Amino acid sequence: MPIEMDCAKCGKRLSVDDTHVGKMARCPSCGHIYRVPGGTEAGLDATTAPDVSPDTQAWSPSQQSETPQAWFLKIDDGRVFGPVPQSELEQWRNEGRISTTSELRLQGEAEWRPASVLFNDLQQPKPLAPASAPDEPLHIDSSSPFSDIVETVPTDIQPHRAGTILMLGAIGVFCSCFPAALIGWVLGAQDLRAMRDGRMDPAGRSTTQVGVAFSVLGTIIWGVGWLVNLAGALS
Image (tube, rainbow, N blue to C red; front, side):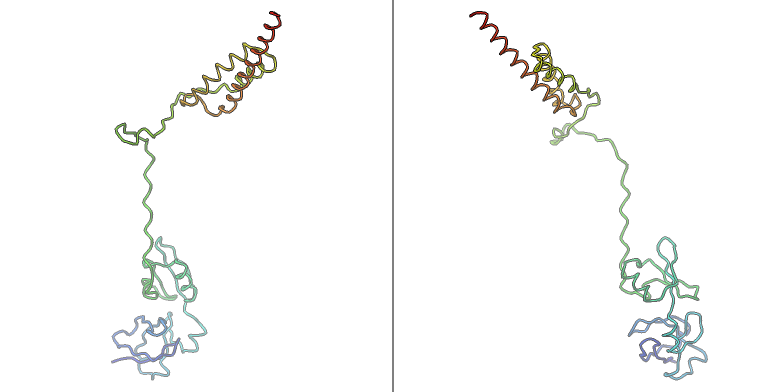
């Protein structure tokens, strides 16, 4: 025998088979969740048949609007939030906090139900990214066509001597000291070559280049001076 009642939210006339007495149902018009009345409630006419609240007490439509239903939400990790009204529950759904694996429970009830009972448009939860594998040492295959573009860093890198070379170059320029300029030139050339080959710390490259430039300049100045002195002696 069908049970007839009015939806407490939108007022639509509803007809439910009496085999569903005591179960939760949803209004097809507004989505309102209600309990199907039974027993003495089934004999009420359509205009007075009340909706049944989550705590099993009969509410009239006016009572239903004054006291909204409260819900609990259980998410995947077992945490429970609530009680909150259905409006806030819908906001959580819009924010993506409710998925098809979430569960809902009305306040005053003990049974948890899938969230899809209330929200039939839920999205599947996003799969977790696989855990990254621990870093492994890089193995270079010499037969690979790309093996020649892999830069290997030697472990026995020598410290640079940029400060020493710069000092020798400065002495060569400002003191016209040919030995200092010559030594700075030779050492600087060797160190720059070692830096290009990766055998020396490249952090001192720019200072070494300045030291070499001073050493070359000091050598030129000494050479010019020696020629001037030689010409004076011959004249």
